[in-house]
Length: 127
Image 1 (cartoon, rainbow, N blue to C red):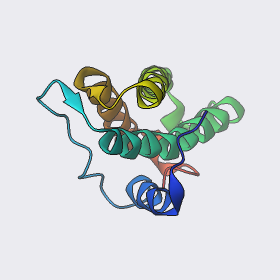
Image 2 (cartoon, rainbow, N blue to C red):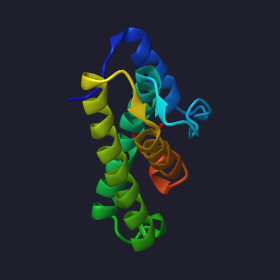
Image 3 (tube, rainbow, N blue to C red):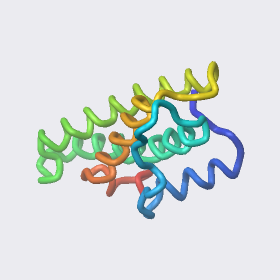
């Protein structure tokens, strides 16, 4: 289940996942975040995840490209898996609670930040 809460949220998510820097996504020091903060982070992850998937598909068909090094692929896979797990947990909390644990949110923020800094950020869906 993808998080989709109206056109305004979708537009915000597209702008966050786009070429603009994701300044709104910052780790929090408290114990919980609001569903709105979590939705923005989850939608940002959804946008960058498509770029990660495109990068890995490209590397599968063009393994000789220097950006497709084993280290780069491992990092993209690790961050994508961590982001998916955190996003899925956030979706569960949004359905059952009014607050999301900051640790899960922070995990998602780190995954988005790492993917934005990886070669995957240059592939379809990431911009």
